[in-house]
Image (cartoon, rainbow, N blue to C red; front, side, top):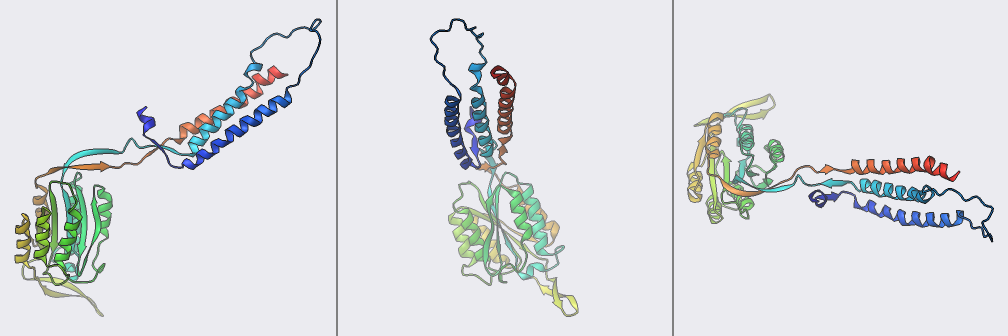
Length: 334
């Protein structure tokens, strides 16, 4: 019974074809009346009475088999599906939004191959190690937007993360806007633990929301912010396209560590400084050890098609009708 309760139909409009059955049955009844004649005689003396047989009484099985075949085939065309694989569950995890800077300075190559790609690759490994968390992605440069909302479908998140690149939005470093957008994604979350991981390599120079104001907003919604400054000490090699090809300049690393530290302190998080790939990886490992809280997760799995059994049953009834009509019933009527 539970199985039938979970069945849904992908193409229910095909059920209109069932109207064929009453039309067909009406035509069959009319045809039987036309074909069956009546003969009135005064006496049956002198006639040899036929041996009574049950076969003529079964002649109506022909229309029964045909009707059942049509019903089964129409159900198959309506594409029954089971959704038993969908389930709600409670799991251990937290809601996390990664807010990543994608400004032009993120192309500096003090990380390998550069800051942006290193941040993407290490963050993707972090996502893969936290299958029970809902994770989202916000990107910012001169402005900010949500690349992926909170989701448990990490394959989609990873694909969207891999697609981010410099130049998707106007250049600049809108740290406050990036943080505010991330908080906006978390403010309605019912998870007991809500976290933003904010990565940047510069100082706020764009956007309408100051970073400290965004931090105060995060605090109001109980969002903990872990800030990460990306960049080596001093200068970093920065690629510049010239008529002679790519040339490298020594660009000063200018991370606003006081502001990033204050954001973390206001929200109950922590500030980290990553100077190379290994340091950034270690930072994600530290964040990975954060306390976890229970959240409700709805897991969606692919539905199972059930049309084949109904199609098989329909063909079986058609075979039974054909066999009955051309063997047992044919012999009885000749």
